[in-house]
Amino acid sequence: MGKIIFRGPAGSKAFIDGATLKPGEEMNLPMEAIPEGCINSKDYEVFDDAGGEVKGKSKSNKPKVGEARIGSKEKEKEIKKKDKEVNKEGES
Amino acid sequence: MALPYPIGPTNFLNLADSMACQSKRLAIKMGTGAEVDTASLNAQQNIDLIMTPLNPGVVEDLLESFRDQLGKVTTYPNAYQVHDVGARALNRHVSGIDAYLTANAIRVAPEFKWALEMLAIESLDAANTFSPEVDPMDEVIIIGLDSATWTDIADIDTENYYAARLELYKITGIIPPEIITLRLLCTRWDGTIIPIDVLVDAGNPVGMTTPIETMPGEMFTAVTLSSVVCSPGSVGQQWKVISRLEREVCFGPI
Image (cartoon, rainbow over all chains, first blue to last red; front, top):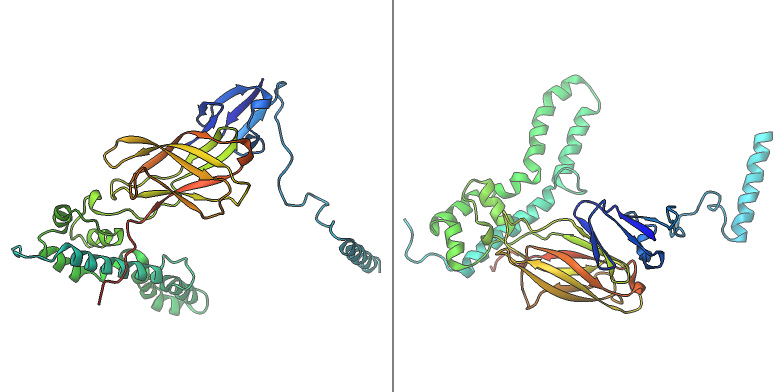
């Protein structure tokens, strides 16, 4: 069985599988019955059968570290060129 | 002494709405000291200018007066002060505005109530003033099959205002159409609670509204969710509950 803990703000409630949860309340559910929207939501903590926290794939559009510089090939070439120039300046 | 034939309700509301509209526009122009292009922000900037430089003599000579100036252009209560004479005359003419509103079963705008109360003319019963817009009152987000998170953010302030028409306003963008049933419990002005099923479509665009009512124009003070019927396909779809003004105030007829 998986587990959901509802962490919504005061005045909120969760409707899941016919049950109503208030902030801080939890319920056990088979993993396959855990609503998709609970995973990665700031309002829920989701745990699997072994008690490990379930994290879905990040839906953030922000680039991760290192990703910011990856774009079109032209852009990559431009960045590499600039890096070389900066390094040369640093050496001289 | 009360006149035998005081002003009729239509003309009374024309005057009251005009005053409310004047206050509303003055309040927007005055601001609270933070909004761009307002008198109060400019008055705050004047103080900053005096404080910035120069020599202590300038500060000593001008600061106090310019602080007073700032107080005079901020929204409250000066957007309402201008109605002192007119509102008192109207109150005298109908021998008490609150009783007049009750007798004629009409409601005034919140800005008119604020003017009357800030000027210590009369306080109005909550049933005689319609509510300002409350946005958002609640939010609901679909999280899975027949599952949702509901957040109660604010209700109508029933200490001061009457109930209002409520609507569900779609926050998230278009996805394939799916009719979702939100089973709501709605609180009437008299405190009774009635269930209303509202059907909303996940395929609707942002900003589409759906009234919460069993008959047109029905008003409530609060609402909450009792259950939801939906498929997992609508995960992430979100609506908020907003209240609508009973009417927009405008300048009365010339």
